[in-house]
Amino acid sequence: METADWSDKRIDRTIKKLIELFKNSNEFFEDGMESNFSRTFVDIITPAPPKLYELLSPYLWYGYNRQDTRINGISITVVAEALTWLPYIENDNTLLVRRKILEEALYARHHYIRDAAMTGIDILSNPASLTAIVRAYSFEKIEPYRQILSKSIINIKKIREEIEKKNPIY
Image (cartoon, rainbow, N blue to C red; front, side):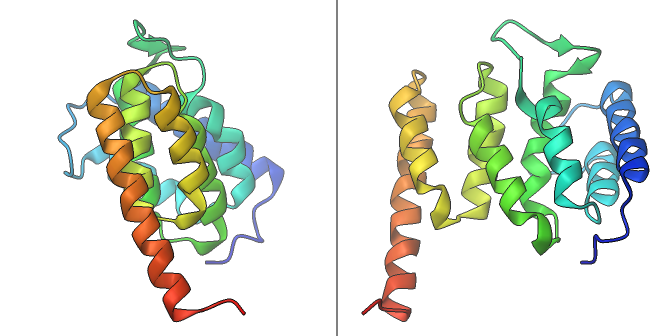
C-alpha cells in the first residue's frame, strides 16, 4: 500500500475526520462483528502512513481511567472498538506502528482499553510483541486478563519456535 502521497495537511484533515467519527459514534458494538464505525474507521485509516497512526495514538488509549466512560467527547467503547480493528488493517507499511499502539495500550488504566489491546495483540500474533505481553502480564491485576495474556505468551512462544525451526540461526 503506497502512503507516500500524504502531506501533513492531509494527515491533519484525516485525524480531524477520525476524531469526529469517534465523537459521533453511538453504536452498540458486538465482539467480532463489523459495525458502521469499524467499516468507516478501517476505510479511512487503511491507506494512511505511519505518521498518522502515531499522531492518532494518544486518542486510542492515553488518559482513560477506570471510571471514565468518555474523554473529550469520545466514548471509551469507541476507542476500544478502534483498537480491536487495528490488526485487520491491510497496510504493511503501518504494521510496526499498529503493533506498538496495541503494545502501549496493554498498560492503559482502563480495562476496556487493555482488553481491546489484548485482542488486537492476539490477532496479530507477532513474536516481536512477546516482551510487551510478558511485561503487561506482570502488571495486570485482573485475573481473567492475566489468563488471556498467559495464553498469548504461550501462543507467541509456539509461533517463535516454528519460525526458528524453519529459519535456524547458525
